[in-house]
Length: 209
Image (cartoon, rainbow, N blue to C red; front, top):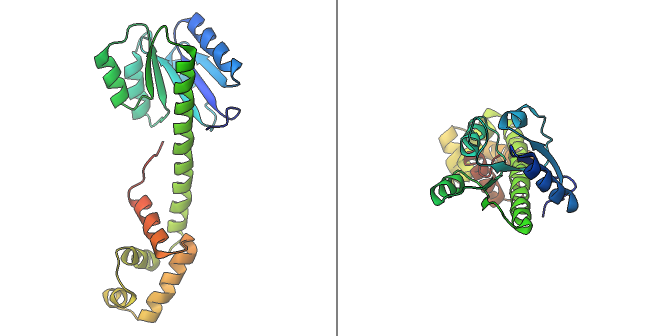
């Protein structure tokens, strides 16, 4: 589970009593939080680079929570969202969940239900941040390869043998072996299977924030 001391929970609700109530609950379990009356206030704030999530009221002045969810996505702000509402309905819930919401809670909800959803959201964000960090490191390693080494890597992970690669690139098998060695060292791959896994992550990154 996410370290609660490092995590941050953001709350957007136009009702100051709701904001204070949620903030008090979060403080009681050692979770840091920041509250906002509008989505615009949240967008203007400086957000720390720590695992975080957003508790978002569906009905906000000016823009609905669902529209704000889409706005965040379009702006490239990927943060797990827990919706809270006093007037939920099934189509609204389905839309929110399809768009990636962690939970959709109807007021009044149990404190434990909200905390469970928050811990789940923080854990999801922690995993996404970890994957993003690992992918960034993988990309740096791949960028350190020469153009020829990248060619060799691509052919190696596609299952070609050294002699087939040599023929395809018009070079000697010895040269291919040298390039292959450089690829394994620079990519920090212990085995061919690990190199194949790295190539797959670079081609189809998942879990990105």
